[in-house]
Every structure is written in structure tokens, then in C-alpha cells.
Image (cartoon, helix red, strand yellow):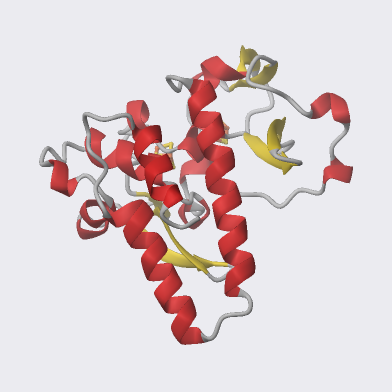
Length: 224
Ligand code: SF4
Ligand code: SF4
């Protein structure tokens, strides 16, 4: 679901904000589960996703609300993206090919209320430019062409969306900076940096009763 898009491929009127409307709603996806299959390694989990998922899955003990829980339960896996080690949703053979571990036997998402940000976004993408980002509709990605218009903020269904969007931008910048830094690192240093990033942003549990964004900002200060 992560797409590399050139700004020149998108006209200005297709750059959207969360207040805009877009043709997103495939009427419950009836009979289709295309985007929950075969591509789970492109559904990269950010720290907010991991926190929400682990909490939603009932990792009641606050020490468990982290990536360790998802990895040990086989719900997430690690992969390397441009030098940076990040978690993504795990896949399993459902008998109809590989599919997301959260796709149920009726081809529905079993974790809809706490699904990751990239799942909420689809079929939108994000385009980052000059200290901000835009939403855009990825043409041809959703297999249902008959879709109705929805306001993007309603489609995402995320509380405190402005805080979330500020966090998304900040997390994107951190990753880009670390990826650039990793390009000049030897293998041993790259391993150390990756481990530090994983530990700081994913493995150290976030306190469930405190604001996530506040905790993220505290951690961010530790690498600046
Ligand atoms: S978490 Fe839900 S929406 Fe996302 S890929 Fe898995 S089944 Fe699909
Ligand atoms: S491709 Fe479109 S219709 Fe099919 S599951 Fe994904 S969002 Fe729903």
C-alpha cells in the first residue's frame, strides 16, 4: 500500500486535505478482499499502529503493549525498507492464498476499530512535500470502480486527527533522516541504529492511560 509517487504525476486539484471529499466508499467491499491479501508486507506499522493494535487485541498488562506482543503472537513481522528495520502486518495461508492474519473466514477485517493507519487510508495515499503532506486518490488500486464520496476525515475515523496528522509528518521526517544517515553507515553501526530505533519507538511499551502523541514527542527528543 505504500506507493512511490512523483509530484509531477499528480495535478494540484488531486492533492486533498482531510476536509475534502473523495470517492472512497466501496459499499462495504462486498465480495472483495483484494487489498487484505498478498500485500501485507507493504502495510508497514508505525508506532501509533502498534500501540493501538496491541491495546485493541487485549494486551491488558501495560508492559505488553508494544511490538514484542505482536511479534510473539505472530501478528507482525520485521523487514528492512531502504536500510530501516520496520514491522509490517503478518500474513498466513488462509486456504485461498496468503492473506492478512486479521482477515476472518468471511473475508472481513476482524480488527476494524483498531486497524492500522495504512488500512484506514486505502485507496488514498499520502504525498509528502515541503513540511506537509497531502492525501491523493490512488487510481486503479481499489477493485471496485463504483464508489461513493466520503469526507476524508470520516473515512479515516481517527480521533484528534490534527494531532495524528502532525505525528504522521513527524514520524515520516524521522524515518527519512535515519534512512539518509544509514546510507553511510557500516553494517555494525546500521544494526545498532536499527535496534535503537526499534527499542525506542516500538519495543518500549507506551503507557495506555497517557496521551500517545505526548509520549511519542518525549521519545523523539531522545534522538534529536
Ligand atoms: S488489518 Fe484488516 S484491513 Fe488491514 S489488511 Fe488486515 S484484514 Fe485488511
Ligand atoms: S480493493 Fe477496494 S473493494 Fe476490494 S477490499 Fe480493497 S477497498 Fe474493498
